[in-house]
Image (tube, rainbow, N blue to C red):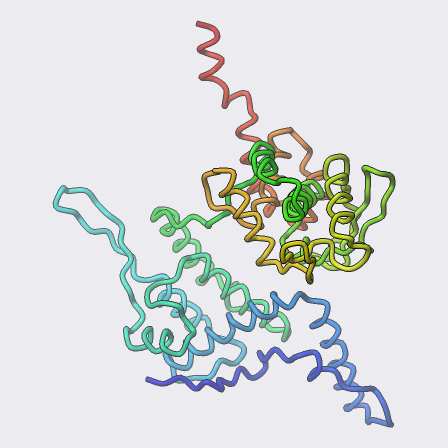
Length: 377
């Protein structure tokens, strides 16, 4: 079974900024002018949105289009029917059933529902990494992108249909029972951060990594992309140990001032002086004593992971560990949620509460009942 590699996505095609931009010159007709303006507006939006976002959206739409073509023989066009959305969910979540084990215990299982030849064709064409079912988080992500595509065209999303929403809610309950909780990176809280910093010596690499960890954590738990994009011009120094950092580009458009103070500011000054950096990217690649180009977001995640491993910290660390650690520590210290969100730049309360509530629970008096009871004895 073959997939058309030039799968037409019609109105869903994500064009490049160059293709979208059309110069406003000459004496166009009203219709031509309207089209040119629409293209220019789209170009601005494409450029203003992080490339990683467009890449993720395009990947999700290509996958849905490939599945649609193989499963139904139809090209992906908008609007998608409710029945096709439900079929997509069932094909990728699977058929749920409870079976009785020889011990008499009931066990919940998910069985493949998508035809095996279609699954194999998606893998062979590179649309899937491996055969089998999707995690619920992957299904949710792909459907959210499809909903976005409908909204972009002024169409009502079939994902908001009551029947689809009920099916998704039921699938999430089953996924939770099966232990498919969203995978999160280990939080680098204050104690963990301190141990990681202890692995950073006075070498050029050690100074860089120390400054990077402190900057990323103390300025509000910056995303790895935000750390990678940070430049000297984004800092306004208010003294030897205090600076204000303003992002020119972030995932949520956050441009509010972020403090870089005390230990973090001193470490950053020492790194910049040692690396002789006076403009451009704050954090660079190193080849021994030679300072190279800007670190990528992936390289920053690798540094966090490596320092955590050197410190002997258990868990799955990556770039997001700094962000999650900052919010968790804020919860531990009873920092008001509004203040935490002002630092992190989260737009939605539910996004930050997932991390903050862990700190709230750990810092509550109720969590110390066992210890308090032992003291009383």
